[in-house]
Amino acid sequence: MTHFVELDNVTLRYGGEATGTVALRGATLRVGKGEFVAVVGPSGCGKSTLMKALAGLWPVNRGSVVVAGREVTRPVEIVGMAFQNATLLPWRTTIDNVMLPLEIVEPHRSQLRRKRAEYEAKARDLLKLVGLAGFEKKFPWELSGGMQQRASLCRALVHDPELLILDEPFGALDMFTREELWTVMQDLWMARTPTVILVTHDLREAVYLADRVHVMSARPGRMIHARDVPFPRRRALEDTYRPEFTAITQELREHISQARVAA
Amino acid sequence: MTNTTAAPAVPDEDKEPRAPWLASRRNLERILPWLVVLGLFLVWEGGVRLFEVPRFVLPAPSVIFESMVRWQGPILSNAWQTLFTTVVGFGIAIVFGLIAGVLIGSSTLVYKGLYPVLIGFNSIPKVAVVPILVIWFGIGTIPAIITAFLISFFPILVNVATGIATVEPELRDVLRALGAKKRDMILKVGLPRAMPYFFASLKVAITLAFVGSIISETVASNRGIGHLMMVASSRFDVPLVFAGLLVTAVMGVMMYLVASVIEKRMTGWATRGMDGALTPSGG
Image (tube, rainbow over all chains, first blue to last red; front, side, top):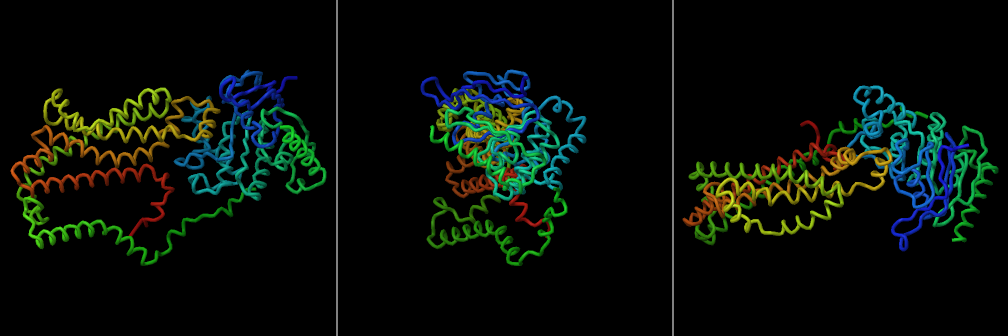
């Protein structure tokens, strides 16, 4: 069976052959369509590099990256991305920020003028889904950090990307906001079922959100362990304190500390 | 999940009556520059009278104003000429600075190739270029326009280039992942992001443009405030020289104000709406 995302034995190096830093070596990852996968690992293990390789933002030196049956050699247009920083444009209102991808990605780009109202309604619905109704006309600097990150998620999703790449999107938020956004993220995913790859260093977050958690080794990064998370949806935040749940986080934690020792 | 009803709507806060001291302080801020100018003139006038400074060394403000009134015809027509060459040169500098700034800021290749040359070019004293311009174009309006342009385009170019070149890498990734072309990148992110830098540079550039025009008029022209001051000083009419300086300063301040008003209109987001929050809309 072919997977939606296939990363095969990928080696990626920043800089030259001899002096460059090898960020990934022999990394292999397969994700089925509509799956929610998390990638965890010790810090500096090349998680973000993996995402860049997936999105086609950085060419791989060896191995292959295939997304939706096509070899990735340049930026993939069916991808939506969100990062640790919300990176909203300060001169645009929240709704205009969310609609930015529609101004760039085809076919929306050429239809935007005609279907403006329709697209705007869509953006409004998304904002409502993440609890930002009524903030459409506010500027990013009028929103709290958590609200900005919600808007950033909406921007990543507005053009209905088939693949959503999240690089520690909740990393800079306080604990309560973070947990609240986990539930928001789960709802978004259940409503639209894109394929999601989430990079995080928070094991509770990984286990709460993902169908499967992959553990990466220290640099140069590769996958050393995969763990399915069998709990049914929709998961509640309280579940993260149940023994079955903590057993999985504990298991992952041990794998990561082993990876760090091995480095 | 939707907490719409709890959404904090804060606009009412603005309607609260302001503390009276805040209003008086704002009035003080408004008239303070005038008070400073007035004070300066008074001290100047007093000093000159007290120490009996001869008028061909330092004329008192009253003498300068008197000279201004007497020569108002020539002053106005020459000031108009200077304003004209400055604004035209400045306009060309804006267009050229914007275009070159976008090119240099968005391409490392152009940056590496052009920037050292431009730095070298900008280091040349503009007063040394004027004689060459005179050989090429004759004396008068055209060298003044070109000098104003040459002296004022550089800060515009550097600021626009900086604004475009410093787009956050993550933001760039977000856009590239969407398949954004270079053109999208510049139009949707680079240029809007560079606007605060651009307007800040305009305020510097407009005053420089005046310097350029007047330098050129002083060296080679038979019109303009610079020329007027040259003629006046050759006749030892020092009050008229000072009148020319004052008129130039007034024009400079006026153009600066125009630039800063446009800046506030266009890039309120860069100051995070602070001005809007501090200035009451009415009364």
